[in-house]
Image (tube, rainbow, N blue to C red; front, side, top):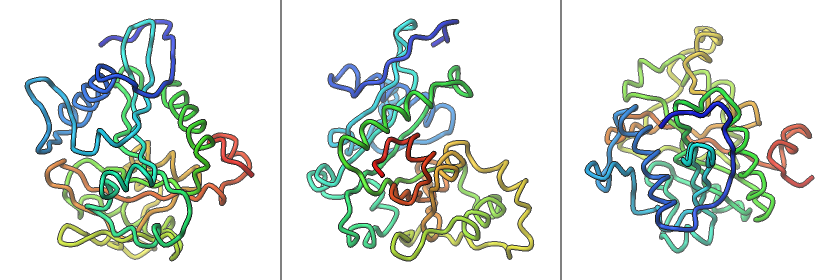
Length: 253
């Protein structure tokens, strides 16, 4: 895939099998080829990154119609869809009891990725505008989902994980917890030993974007050896956003 000089962006939900496969091909490019991930349902012959949850999620696609390609994706699972699936995707990694007990409308986000040729430009902005409209349409109160650091060496990630734990830990009523046996503490360094600037350099761009929007993290990381990642669970309470952040996401005052 090559980027055109003048992309023509269009955001829409996937409505056909072909559109879903386009999303799965992009996910394969990013999560499998770039990051070395895998999974029991990954189709290497067809180059599709897929799992059993895909049929239950809504898939938000960013098309570049000038290139005729899907260039960014998000998948989204509302509470009624999770009931049909039997659980949220994140529940394999995190105990979500506090979110279930909140009685608020939940939206799980996942598999967000942008083709490398479109990173650093307006692609994510367009995709998030589509997410904002979806959030407003469905009156979502809490957004959450796992986001990943590359690699499974938790000690190598001590600086950014400790920073997230010390500065961005979720309040108790939203604090999901990582499940054993693959849970790992994020409280690895005393706060006075955290180099905040160096730590933030190591935080992936997507996680930093959520933090800027008021996102917080659950207790503990989850080491996903199959996907070659160390995951954190991000939670965002739309009611707690600032006015500027609400405008970005389209949440109601």
